[in-house]
Image (cartoon, helix red, strand yellow):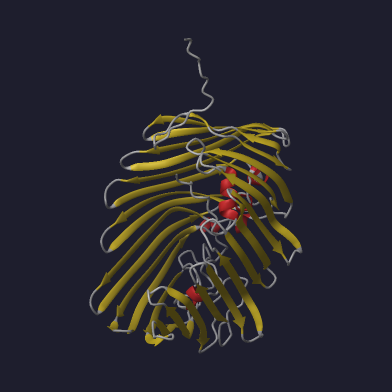
Length: 538
């Protein structure tokens, strides 16, 4: 009897062992790249490092090589991503992208982290990227961090700069380099007395504008009186800030060593009330009022430069912060009370079914400190801010609202509803509103239509621009050993608002294909709560 030779079309591991070989291709058709084909090849070089090569053919632009190298040692781990397009036919130039991430633990106390991103040109992601989150980037971060951790204190040394890839930003709008930045943070807590120490020393460098060193130090002493269901924490602090500025970057007569010293007082207190609720008193409802008083005296800060200080959006987190600005270059004078009340509803198992918070800040006098080009706050009160979350096992509703009581207008509104009756299906609605900035609605769905079949879709619309921001729809079939997807998509791909269209096809062989192929990443980012079918058993 003659033996027949059987040709193996595919081989792949049936356990957790990795194997070199081709991964399933990704096939797309995009407006900016034309026919788009990626054929990955995985190289299992060693148990602790591997390499994935991804040749990418784009009919409109040419042949690109993408690579992903991962490594792991007893004390370090990291990944290097590199993309190179030797000749983009659309722009007649070579294009590249590098992303390096590294982390090392030298002991229980020392850690080094590094991240370096670099791209050849400002429009690389707009032309070759595949998602709005990628194309909307304006800066690429490069940093090296050296951390030391002790039981009660920590030390950070950082070297950081950015590559700005938004051509609309002027030189004055580009961020400063921090070469270096050193941060010391310590906290010592006793039964009654607490002490917090935070000190930062930074050298700010940039091609334009004022440059130099800044030292900012805050030393705070607090007392904590606590009983069951209540606490009272008075605190006093001294905040000292000094600058040593480069003379060559200053205007004639400008002080090259300005400084600021401020005493700060605060009182933070809260109470928690509980009562039984429900028919059989099986539920618990809480009422948790909180009040924070802060006093910061006025000091003229007009001669201080502004390196990295901003005025953040007002929200519940900002409501109970002692400082109006984020960053040391400005500390707003204030005499204020912040009030907030939270209520929670817990079922018999202790699970929160409802959480709602309402708060506002009242100012006892007008403020005088502001950022350059802006007016100081002269209002007697802040906006009202409210948040509420209601949920059961299969659905959840989150709402946020901000109300300007002086103008009787809405300052911000956010709503998100999610219905998930089973693990393989999802229906979601979302809405976000800020006057003049955002007026946007979202609809998303992941739902089975038959055994092993489901539809996947998302639609995002801007009522402000009266046009869609992103829309995609697709279907997926899953068997025991393989999965097939087809997705059509249209999304904003440029900072100018220009859209792009794409059709993607993907065949996934379980145990053979990569875990995070582009269509999978698209669905994970595009639909909140999306996840793949669990692999059938039996």
